[in-house]
Amino acid sequence: MIEIKHLHKIFDDKAVLSDINTTFESGKTNLIIGQSGSGKTVLMKCIVGLLTPEKGEVLYDNRNLLDMNKHQIKDLRREIGMIFQSSALFDSLDVLQNVMLPLNMFSSKTYIEREKRAKFCLNRVKLSEAKDKFPGEISGGMQKRVAIARAIALNPKYLFCDEPNSGLDPKTSLVIDELIHGITEEYNTTTIINTHDMNSVIDIGDSIIFICKSHIEWSGNKDEVLHSKNKELNNFIFSSDILRKVKDLEFNKE
Amino acid sequence: MFLLNGLRTFGEYLILMKRVFGRPDRMRMSLKRYANEIAELGISSIGIVLLISLFIGAVITVQIKLNISNPLLPRWTVGYVTREIMLLEFSSSIMCLILAGKVGSNIASELGTMRVTQQIDALEIMGINSANFLILPKIAAMVTIIPILVTFSIFAGIIGAYCSCWFLHIMTAIDLEYGLQYEFAEWYVWSSFIKSLFFAFIIASVSAYYGYTVKGGSIDVGKASTDSVVSSSVLILFSDLVLTQLLMG
Ligand SMILES: Nc1ncnc2c1ncn2[C@@H]1O[C@H](COP(=O)(O)OP(=O)(O)OP(=O)(O)O)[C@@H](O)[C@H]1O
Ligand SMILES: [Mg+2]
Image (tube, rainbow over all chains, first blue to last red; front, side, top):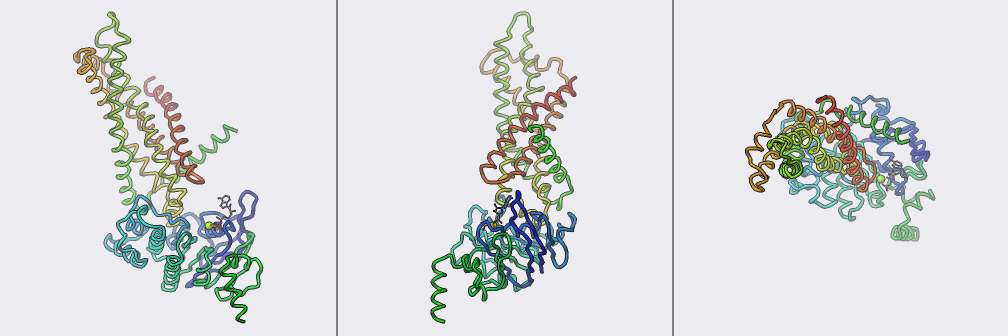
């Protein structure tokens, strides 16, 4: 479980996040939605400590990240897996070595066991056959899946995904969403996902917060999100024609 | 303003170096990277070092022969001067300037690309000290390989000088050989090595600093790569002056 209390982040006098309070529960996929530029990535980076917020608390099961020293942060990070908006695979390593890197750095297991674990993770994302390829030789969706395999290699307690399905076709997006959802339930991880993909929201939104104008405008879950009366949220969700038509149809039915 | 910026850059550089020179998280991984860097930065530079040194050695011999042939000067002058130029300046300083272009831009653009594609963030999230993991093996590799490159350069230069005798017939190889050996001071070779160690450190650490601290996109990576070559070249020239004073004075 991760709790955020009174988090503020300011860039050059402009408040990107102001007074964010929320709780991300374990075993659930927690979604952060919002327009491009609304501060989703900034919020996620504040939570993992890549950015330092001006004010606030970030509690990982009651351990405050902002009070930790360098060593404590390092230890905490071994419990964190993260998938970046741009996959961020290491170009100089092949797929298997990418997944093995965190194991090589922090696991005391033998090489054979580490390789077995990495292959297991690759199998989990259905990429066993691509293990000898380099990141430049596989498609964007495959790169995302390798990033997932790498993120789960050390069995993280906390999994962060920054737009795991941006730039992917709807079908591949679905595969990735299901994958992350499955991993979350199986290992009881605290999963936080940034997205502006409505399919993901409706599929796997166990808990959703909507960020707008630097604060949390709405929070709820996938069953509530389509029926909310919040104007900003409706503006955001029903900006696409198809969804608006679907909504109109539903209302006509009722 | 300019001074302030310079001071800030220097401060940031020192802070980065403090992170670089820590104990590696996993020695075995760092040693593996070190071996890779030796191949990537060092071994791959041998070709260009040999080529350039060979030609410069030959050209210096020809130039000196043509320009200072004087009946009052002994015939071995050409060999003697060629040796001094190669040993004292070319094989250490000028060679490192050339390497600053090749190796420095390589380091800066590699690290810069890793920064803008969030690969460095990914390392940090795993709990790895990315500065130590990425930069220390590069610095260590450059510092270990540079004396070898300098040695190659000195020998290639001398072979170049002989080539100009054998193939261009500007003078006899015997005269050249006498000059090359005339009043040879071993210390000159050592001082060449010592200087090159400093230069290697400058090349690797300065270009790593520019690459590691890139903000933005591919344009900024290109800019960092240029900046790193300019800065390390200037620093090499400056420290060459200081070191020469210290070592020779
Ligand atoms: N390092 C930074 N320095 C200054 N401003 C920044 C920085 N990083 C982000 N911002 C600003 O913060 C705001 C939020 O950016 P953020 O990257 O969090 O958006 P996002 O919600 O993730 O958008 P997207 O969906 O496009 O990824 C933007 O207006 C951006 O300009
Ligand atoms: Mg983002």
